[in-house]
Length: 184
Image (cartoon, rainbow, N blue to C red; front, side, top):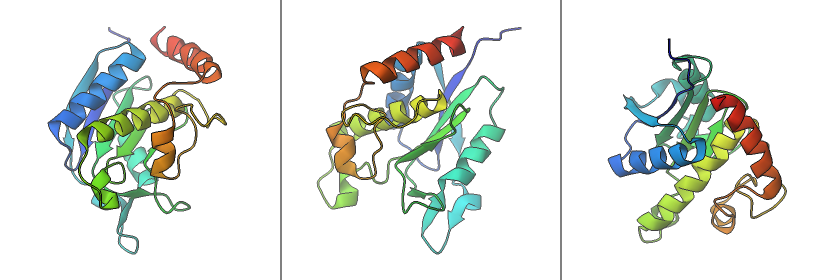
């Protein structure tokens, strides 16, 4: 029996193929494991909040976690849907702390959301940062006070653009320790 940990990425609703490829490459380089692309999941009607016109990220995380193949699996969903939580007006992404599930939304990462011209290079950069940030949470990292660290809290797009795509020295040590336990 193969007991190696697994990592997967899946589209939630519609997500372009190049977005999933970019996501797979980012996750693979961070975890140093092969990352599979799962079949697309349907739009999560169960998580839609009509009054807000958004989707509840917490409900999505719960659903993703229930579908994880085992307790060592890491599954990241990427979606075009606008996400929120009961207490936050919107989120770029969400993850279970030390858990198996994460979701990243492209909706507010896209320049078009801010009525600016499309910029796929900037979208890739923002997506990589958000994927790294949410994976950090999946491995137990909390928000960092260093504004350039990828684990710094981002509640607006300018903060995502201002931070690095890498962990600071402290977060890097925590990441290495946690990720090596997972792959161990």
